[in-house]
Amino acid sequence: MDARCARVDKLGGVHRSPLTPVFAGLQLGLHALIAALTAVVILRAVLPDAPQAPAIVVLSVAFLAVYAAGATRRLRGTWWLAALTALWVALMVLAPDAAYLAFGLFFLYLHLLPRRWGVLAVAAATVVAVVGTGMHRGWSVAGVVGPVIGACVAVAIGLGYRALYREAVERDRLIDELTRTRAELAEQERAAGSLAERERLAREIHDTVAQDLSSIQMLLHAVERAAPDHPARDRIRLARETAADSLAETRQLIGDLTPAVLDGQSLVDALARICTQARSDTFDTIAVVEGEPVRLPMPVEAALVRIAQGAVSNVVRHAHASRMAITLTYYEDAVRLDVVDDGVGFDVELLDREPSKAFGLNSIRRRVELLDGSMSVESEPGLTAVAVSFPLEVGA
Image (tube, rainbow, N blue to C red; front, side, top):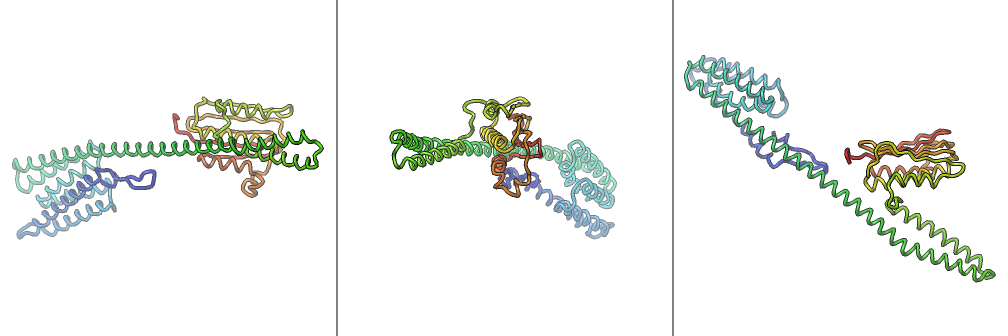
């Protein structure tokens, strides 16, 4: 009983219902009841003048051994219950005191069998107990009323236990749901805090380092124009170019820190803008959306835009392609991005064999792995496809 009320939560710890001690107590009580009733049958059988004592003792010990095997879970199920019932019926043929064991069997029937079959089994066992007692001791009102009352009490307790167990299961379900919700909220807060910190760092770098580098570049440019014949003109120009390169790298760093280049637009608009910016007289691009667009979590949208930027940049710089297509597909439980071009292709094994020569694609793969997504790359001359997908909660 108590094993059914224990569960392992998402964090790896074992949670036990507050009602677990109740079920454990009921289980121990049933064990004690079966053992005590079997002991009564054995003791009555070894009394002087008791008929067929050896057979009764053997059957009683066998009954107790089979029950102990099931209680320790070495044997459990319909066959176990059938074996106990067969041994009990054999005891009823030999000893009227075996009728006492029916009370313990009532609880087993109600606990292990479906409700309808459990009640029918209790009714059948009651009939066997009444008939067996009557055959041994003669028919009497007490011989009939006793087993019937015991059956009614067992059914009432059994149904009460089922109701209590259903309540415990529902309670555990609610606790699980609350735990999952709390974990999701914590993860969302962590992601939001991470994004906020990245944005703060981006603003700080923009307002300090980037602005200073821009000022240095303009001042050096002004010096170049004011003194074109200055002996240090070459060094001034070198300093200006170094500042310009540093400013470009700083802006790239700022771009990497910001969540995405959505600029207040939707993900679809951002991907279309990436295609438009990459298009030229010799390079045709198209953005396709399949499925019903929905609002995605910010980390997923940011990753999709960054991945599209990186993949398109690779195509423009290395593929020597004439056409490229970006396809964004919305599924019920996932979102998928495909970037396909007709370029010269490359050796896909470079991703693992020589990561330094496939830095862009490995960077995309790291972004995908951070969000528990999946990535696939296929390439041959005339067709290269980079596909990434992220799982979504159904109905999100």
